[in-house]
Length: 400
Image 1 (cartoon, rainbow, N blue to C red):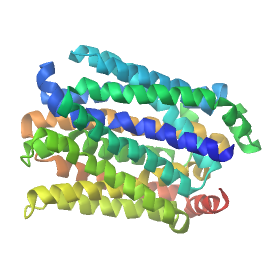
Image 2 (cartoon, rainbow, N blue to C red):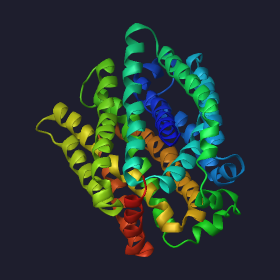
Image 3 (cartoon, one colour):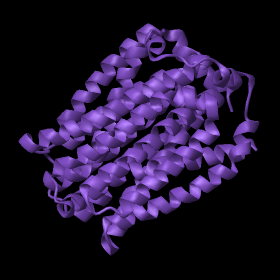
Image 4 (tube, rainbow, N blue to C red):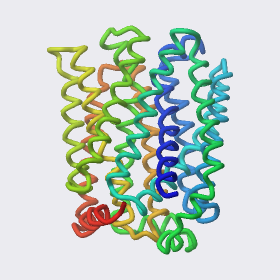
């Protein structure tokens, strides 16, 4: 029962990753036919992110009322409907309309499952869980490239919609498994009083960690959304090849998280975050390197992905140790909302900048976000105290 549920959780995160990389890889082919500027990808991304912010902030209340299993099933069903809507859309306003349920579906499931895994599983499984997201995110551009070679971008969205519908059915059949996993700690976390936003903000280190999450997702999503366009417009790579090359970033995340799962229990959350930040910096330097412009950009995308790999799972896994299990779902929801605010505003902001300065400043934009993330993460570490980080590492050792 326990291993089956873990397998289903992994499937759910593959389904979360599949649609996340579709827009960035397809946009160079989408925007000419839609009759909109290149920068309008940021508008769709902003709408999706706005929905995830709203649903993340409600995750504490929804999870306490419905439970993680039902929240996950409903959210995946909403995402499937939104992807089907994308597959039949032929205008920019229609894409914006379908982006609303897409965002609403993504936020609650992300916060709910992440908190569930942080409480019940070790750091190893948190990394491998997000590795499954990377599997989906890396497969998305390949699915879109396949569709572009044989039909239109709508077919790529249609294929992913069918997979999401299948997962919704699996999640519905798995609902009894979630109920059988209740423990005393999870019961306390789901039956207590939901914390208000002000109460979460008053938790020590909460604001700094929220900014850290903001920066991480801003960096990850800006890279995922604009990498293909950067390769086409700055490095001279053709559109179809760039759509495939853009997946290198997500391959880096996937491979990095698979490896991180092997060492995370030994190194602990704090060291994993710092290790990832250092590798991201190396990746940005490789993208900037003028000696090997195309090869450097491709190597840099892989390194940025590998650097991103351990950061997010480590920060998420430490949440119950930072704030306590009874407050972790509320804190997780606020952290995820902050992350999605970064997703919502920072990729579109770069899109607006491209109208005036082009895409050539893409790596410098990422570098600025990385510096802010490092500063705020170190400030959060000082406020939460060494004992919290160490506690999260010890928790990882005793969980399955």
